[in-house]
Length: 137
Image (cartoon, rainbow, N blue to C red):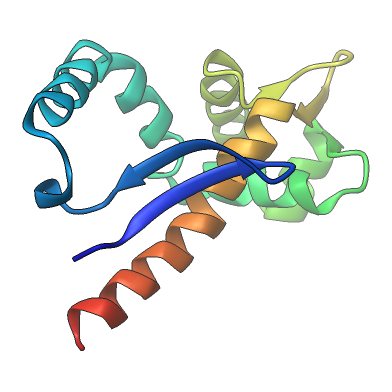
């Protein structure tokens, strides 16, 4: 296929990942699969953040704010969620480091949360679209 995922910072390539198994050296691919197997719990926690519409809505709303901060009440009101749902989802997002609580009753999107949201929601959608276009050629 020839597609690669390249992550760079200030013009310096940090990671280059071929997206077709045929483009990998077998040993490197097996090492990556083994790493995935060892880190399965952490990966599941990460991906679970994006499998719940309420958590995605909460992250999105926090990202929209200039200071990335909302109160518990604002989350409830703006997203029309009951307190139990806000609390349960906020705890899950805090446990994986996506949000932090700078003060009682306030939630802020952490730097990790900002990067993970952009990577998993925005970038992933663009990559899937590109791959679908490549498959259809």
